Length: 153
Figure 1 (cartoon, rainbow, N blue to C red):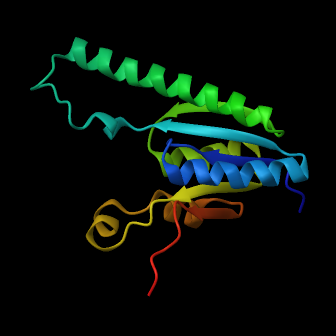
Figure 2: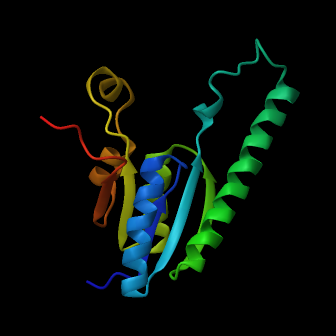
């Protein structure tokens, strides 16, 4: 099956940027289009609550974060396009795993290349893994890229 479109979920972590490097190399070699996706998660602002900030201020904080994310994503897409592969950027609101799978289906994505945080133990049990959910639910192959080499034995 030919690979024409690669989705790269971006959260600006070292893991997602490393995954972008992999996807960029693949994209350049295969002549594909890269789609960079940032999902603005509602819980990004769980630390701010109406008890601390009145709704207008909370809305302003969320709006500022949204604008900064869009700016960073667009800059990253331009830098990626300058490296060779055709690149588009998309910013959506919602839950990351769910939105990633929706975009895979809606955009006809052939491959997802995404970073992992490598959580283990209680954090993994409580928070789960976006990459794990995408691997389970995506109708296309998913290549996961560790943010750093795993520790030795």
